[in-house]
Length: 231
Figure (cartoon, rainbow, N blue to C red):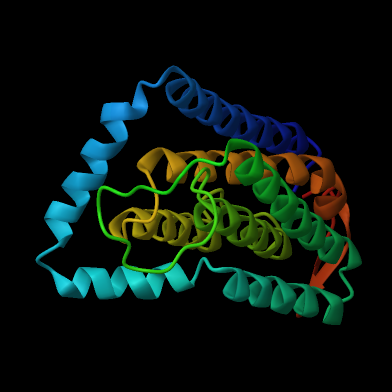
């Protein structure tokens, strides 16, 4: 990978920041002005009407949502950090730890500050005990699986923009967020805000660590690569 590729990567991360910030701003504006009053219930009721007669969809949603709970995400982070530590990629360990720990603090602070009640127009199909906005499952999965995907792509030497790890992370994060609506425990805007904040946070930490992660010499098998090396 050449030096010329570095600005392109920075621009891509900046674009992710802008996208995440824009989505968050839009959702927050709708929420603050009360325009979500009809928007949220309509989608939630439509979703329940579409899935209510399909028990298998509810079962799938219940399984998928487990992939976004705290225990699963902390285990995933611990395993990823352990793998990086075995490979002596200490910077990657720090990146994963900062993304996860910082994200956990952010989600707790936002939930406490907004204190939005959970929806009550449909029955909850799983137990919940925290405020509704934003969706912790959506946000947490976005920065955990997103940061793991970044490390996998970095370990592969950059490679294609749409690396399978990135695609898999995006699909999983989307499915986890959608499952929270199907289970009736979040308003759609809770999930959208969770995705937006999670994406924005991941992009921010990646921007801070990005050059260092990409520039760190890395050896996988017999291949060693530096970001600054000429082709």
